[in-house]
Length: 165
Image 1 (tube, one colour):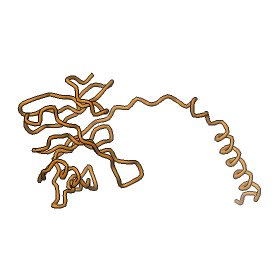
Image 2: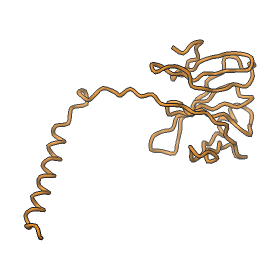
Image 3: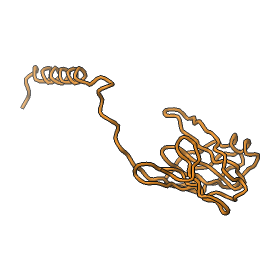
Image 4: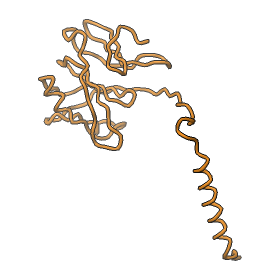
């Protein structure tokens, strides 16, 4: 059974009309819906480092790619065979034995680049630091535990505090 020729054109006109009406009914920026609450997990891995200073994420099933951390190693004045990487709130937090800092690496959407910054450890002599996620549904922090110090908590601003709250 064949359809009348006008049926396809009428259907297209209805779709175009509805689509243009939908655009006209879109709310202005100041009237948009409020932000959604979201809570998501974090995970921590020990990741190998290649001879060029790249952290190899491809060793793990969950991740693909690498982070060129050579500038971080140069700033720390050391190298490492493995580093600790915590993925938390869309950023990578990196540390290794012998580091005086925890590094926050923030991927830049739509590009193969990331910004990064050092967050000095409160007591570099406290020993190697273990990274973990800490907090409840209202606020989370990166928790730093050391062999001989801590715990310390890092807020998303980079501020180190004694309690996450």
